[in-house]
Image (cartoon, rainbow, N blue to C red; front, side):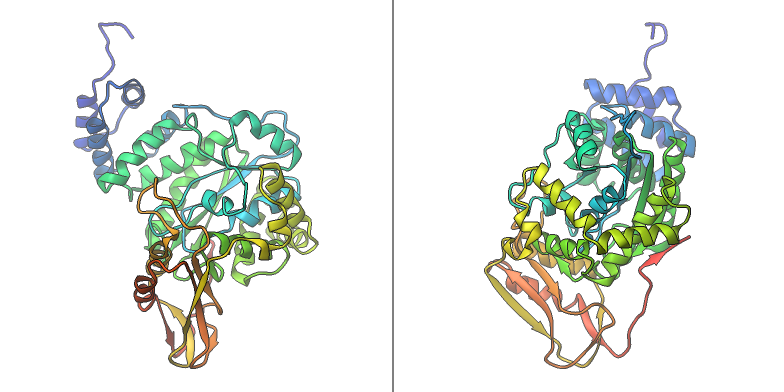
Length: 437
């Protein structure tokens, strides 16, 4: 661009959005170029993010914003790979370990899954932390190693590298410390700039609602789902979204090592019914999207067979071994490291288990040392909660409800948090797990 036609300066870009107008593609490109080379300061970026938070974005504007974020770094390509490339994304929740069994399950039926995931922060756990509860497992996978792994075992579990959507990493850090996280266009562009960098053919989104969700309100979750589906399909990626209930934990285990063990149970054809239901529902969407099966019923049956006959478990063992983990921990989960102590919480009334505040359940694990307040915090991978029954189950006075796996730290705080997290109700709630729009 000539000196007579210079790049728009950060202040003029901020003023456009501040006044509720639509950013042009030129302004968006200029902002991300200036963010990369330092001409846009963090305070410029924060001011623009605030303006987006308050005024939203039009669809074409959001698409170009996401494209600029995507191309701020490397975009993987798996052209010539002999299998479709797919992934899922969850907006996060309590006990949400679905990625661990889902990725090897999809690989076992002929799909490739380059799963780039994050770490836990706040009240939810992260996929990378859960996997690193497996002794030796490394999620530090360079982009050049993705294709060989996908050709061999069909799965890569990796963290975001410095070259995958670096603009997102900068903007998310600013949003996190300035109260600007819960914006639908900013959430959608953040998620998809990373997922689209994986070179996907198809994507399924698990958008949570309820007390343990990032966006608890049903309609806000539905709006986010619609926004992300439209945005991803605009980039040529076949995309669907399920909205799932996070008014209760997914499964019975919350905590990194405990969730690995429960994931292995699912891969053996067992485990909690709701975890299996969600894994099959998400997987079926991708099997149909990639034309491996013509409809959801046949796709679900094919995936259920792979869980029950050991194919998915065998694939997970291979993934663990390839990424440096100890496969004996998957073959025999009793070998997984455990917390030194267990505190038992019993029912004080007869009735049906009912969860009230899932964020309190997540905060309980953090209080025990199993969560982060900031990204650099070290966590205890062995602590957590293990419920003995699922929501709505009938319980009697004195029956154990929850096993608190702890190392002595934070037990009193954990007990106080759990006192408001659930109760025994007169009747079951019977809310569905999956909502299909």
